[in-house]
Image (cartoon, rainbow, N blue to C red; front, side, top):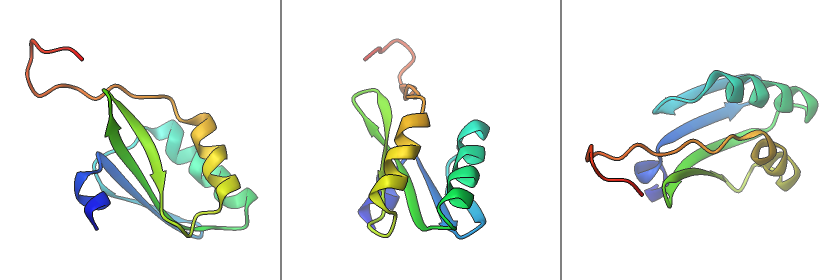
Length: 90
């Protein structure tokens, strides 16, 4: 539960149904999740975008297979996390 609270975004995948339950996800990544889901015969689980050292790192629920996790990490483009203070850079 703590992961869902601190995550920048949360994407739920249930077979062919993909929904963003928190935050927003780039369109290219949603399309890639759809493609991977079709190729792996519809996996179920959650994908979390966790802020780490100025970037968003992907984390997954335990129900997402390791091979699927790696495929999604390979296409994820590290998105910088915007600072809440205008003059501060990480």
